[in-house]
Length: 254
Image 1 (cartoon, rainbow, N blue to C red):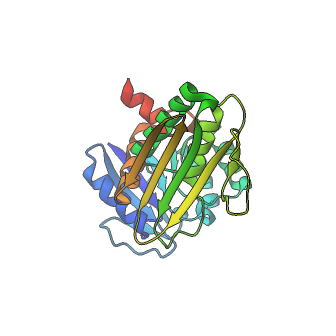
Image 2 (image 1 turned 45 degrees about the vertical axis):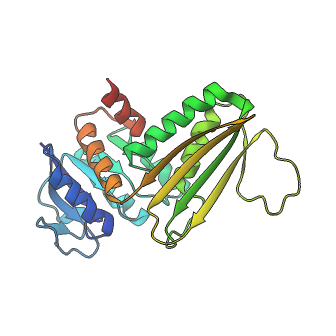
């Protein structure tokens, strides 16, 4: 049984994580950490880790970049693995995460959905096979409340595809200012914002007289919580280092 501490326990994703933990027979929530310090889920919630009386096996963080320092300090002090799902970190904070991974296991991914990470793996394989003979376009769709564009996941996909192409491509985010033929050495990335779309990503490989499309739809935020809990169970007992969804997928394929 993996005892889990949830950072951001009172937020929307914190609630989904608590539900996902409750549904997983290999995990249980030990406590939560949230600036509001209110317990709404049947387990204690502390304002800071310093108030915690128990020691978890793994920490899951779906909160805010401002919580990183306190969480990493506590995790390093007690040698506790961390599943970090928060986005919007500065480069300096990313370096902090990498430094911590030398002492503790850290699972860090911009998208915790198993399905989207399978899409990334398939897109990487398609890029290896199709090379520069197919044009690559990425379309991502999210709800109208989402602040950033393109999505972090779209950039993850683009980076994965780029690694497999013969030449490093240029990312083109908007073509309305251009009046020229599309070059072979580019990846188009397009953002759609509307309604309550949770998250949709489509990778288009367009060749001569044929098109290959790989797509994924997240129909609720629960899929990200389930992925985070699966990652926490996987991370318990691992050696220090950086882990991501490719490691979890590899384990499931063994």
